[in-house]
Length: 201
Image (cartoon, rainbow, N blue to C red; front, side):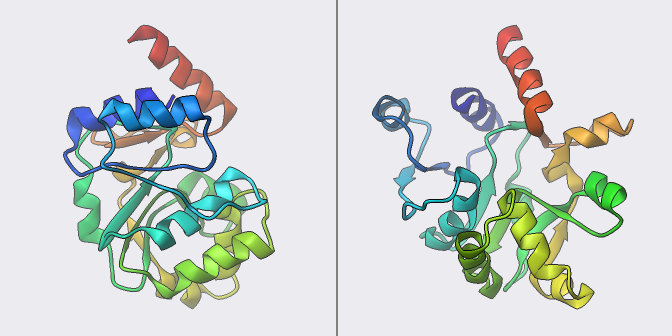
């Protein structure tokens, strides 16, 4: 899936791609190094929690002025560098998870794509909470941090147009956007769809 992801990314994007190694095999690490797709490999501090919880730690150690995390189950369909114009100082830039907002009756943001400038204060707290209180995934941890007060969400998260992280459940709900730049194939059903896409290439 990684090779599929990076090929799609490089079809449309010139922004350098960095690989965060959460513990891949030596064979995969060699492929990453030799593929020519990546500008750099970074190694987040090893944790006892699952791979999802590495995300805020990876963003926290990024050496770049601006960074955008992208999950590898995302089908990149266009140039996504425009996301950086939605980044606000001191905030995480994310797409509202409208399907979860609808199903759960409260605002959610999806962490499949997260853009930052510098190191927003909430980023370190998110990283620490993922270590102290890992719950299901990093998205759920962040949600618990900002749900107690609507102002918390406004202070720490800026909402990005959904073309930068269009969710599989939007399609399930009968919605689509022909201008989407990132199609996020979430969950096991999404991975099945990725396998079909890979098979048909």
